[in-house]
Length: 82
Image 1 (cartoon, rainbow, N blue to C red):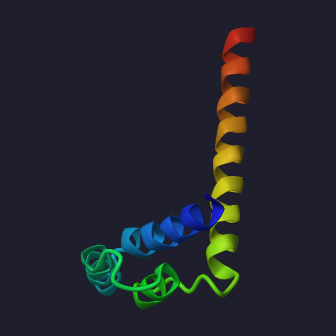
Image 2 (spheres, helix red, strand yellow):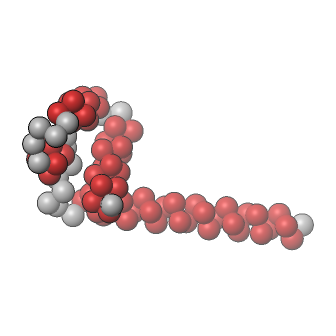
């Protein structure tokens, strides 16, 4: 699951950065189905799972989400005290 989430995170971040080439590469990735090993298909789509960047990007995203959740809880706590 961690590798799939990491690959998806990298793909999504590339697309959300409004990189037209990343969008095109992702759409091509989807059309290729199971035509090759996943690691090769992902690399062709711009996500090299043999490098640390996909895992690092996912860890960073997870940290950001945890911090957001903590801030939301703090805000709710403050509202309850009022």
